[in-house]
Amino acid sequence: MSDEHSESPEKVFRRGRRIAVDVGDARIGVAVCDPDGLIATPVETVPAGGRSQARLKAIVEEYDAVEVVVGLPRSLNGKEGPAAAKVREYAGRLAGLLYPVGVRLVDERMTTVTAAAGLRASGRSSKKGRSVIDQAAAVVILQSALETERVSGRAPGESVEPVI
Image (cartoon, rainbow, N blue to C red):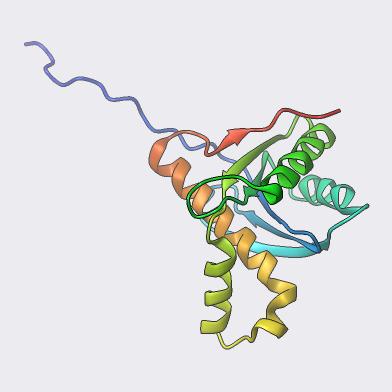
């Protein structure tokens, strides 16, 4: 008797903690997931600027992260502007600092809007929520990346080449 069922490739989800960052001009929101990639949780808000990448490296080491996911801001029509160029440059330098830990860019359209809506729904005002909105946006970025990988079986977004 012949096997008439064709084998479909197994979707593979890579185990390990991932860190997500929402890079802004003033602050960088950071989130982490559990090793099984089920849920993302906020970690902290890092001030943007001179020591931000050193702090992100310390967080990656503290959580023994296997990858960093960086939100890439695009307009609603998918185009990249000056903010995306800044994030690409930042991600390249971060990839150089973190090597061999990989850095990936993922689409972050509407994450801050989604995070702000969630904070408002929980009773937090925008003013009081500024210190955590970036963390909440990082959670949205990471949760979306995890879901994309779980559904597709492939790492989300694009890999960043390290700038050294």
